[in-house]
Length: 421
Image (cartoon, rainbow, N blue to C red; front, side, top):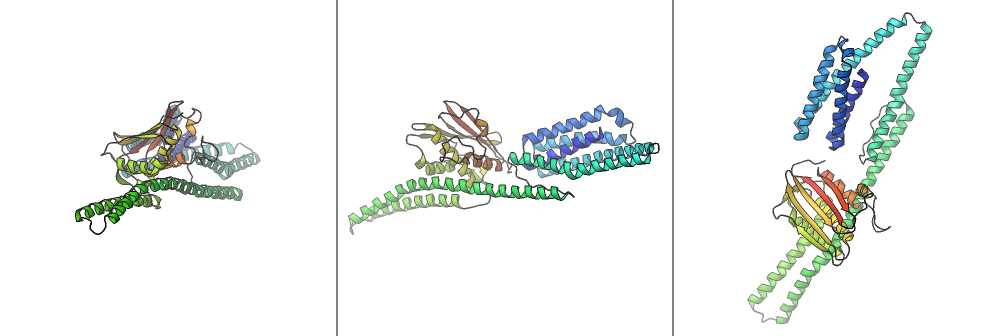
């Protein structure tokens, strides 16, 4: 009963920590499952616990588990540093109580062992003691580190790259842990390289759009210059001023286009700022329009005053990737819809196409790295993976739904508050 309580409480603390780090609903669910398991054990073994000298510790532990859950529920409703500190403090008190209970139970077992030792043959007692010690050493030195590595590998498979902090007296275990950490380091390096590669691919798309967008103002400037040259020295001042103003306007337009490209290509740290979504979407659409298949139409439905806190460069990359994918999926004469709306404490962005859709078996994997339904050589399978990563960094979520023959829809929810991962 006591060992089960210890396991349940320690699992609570582990999933508590995971939730603070990753904000995964599954971690929160596991936290509550282990809390209920601990309360069940306290109720199920109340007769055994009532016979202990430390009965008050068991009662205190039950109250502390309830307090920890209440603090966690409060934090989930209203995340804050103070709320996180309160949850951790409640968890610390709970851990101290369960260890105190476990300590008393161990002492009780030791007393029982001493009583039996007097009637057992010394050699048998010594042999049993050696077995207990050997089993404990195996558990602490081999089984537990390996189990920890197994759990960490499962986290890596889920996309959470976290190094293993393992202390063991066994040289082989330490060597294995070091090798594991080297692999994590390489994976993190490759992940960063993938991010850079995807950004370069997006930059290539934007360059094509920039060339198309720059052609119009340059053509207008050239036309105005030709007109002024043909008019000669006797040109009317008003006519001259009008054309010079037109040229200045076109030069400013070209400058803004180049400035936007420089902003996107420059490596910047993650920085949220309040953005008007519609101008950003229009700018992104201008860049990607030159890459859209002929005949594809894009419908934009975003309120003029819709604002959200976001990293401009990274949000633009999200829109760029989704618009390009939607246009390619729609095919000739297809239709792409980009819309957004405020919904309670979130901004909801929707990108939909009327293409052939995604097969049901493929839909759960669209955000996996290197997963692609395109022909070999036409896609690395990183675009949606990067989109998912950027949305997650903003504290948001993204989902995909599709119907065969009717198209695909990507739905992004970004918080209006600060929930940066």
